[in-house]
Image (cartoon, rainbow, N blue to C red; front, side, top):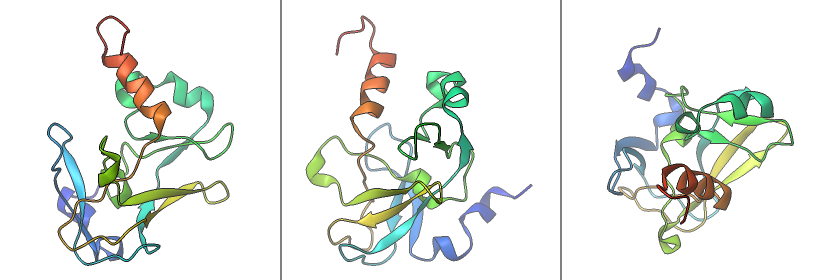
Length: 147
């Protein structure tokens, strides 16, 4: 297998790097190493392609890197795609902080991460995960089911 430090080598990592997220409790985040203009491709989000049945069999705590929207029976799971920069992107609940978005390709079964406004070197990259992600997460972490 690959050694951990090898995951962050190669052309995908020329313009981005992983560091501790600026969001408390979020773990790792993806940061720009150079300026990106609005509309510019930053990186990809790829992983293991799962059917709906396979995705639903995953326990809730294992769905953090699961992305839908590639078709009725296609989900992309980047949980073990450590060498894929897009897996380290966090959502920010303050939507004014969002600076990128996921453009999903059903044909390629991956998402391209695109800047939606200028991103400066050193900025953390944030993209919305979507309301369904947060509803599921809130329901799973709520003690009484109320949010």
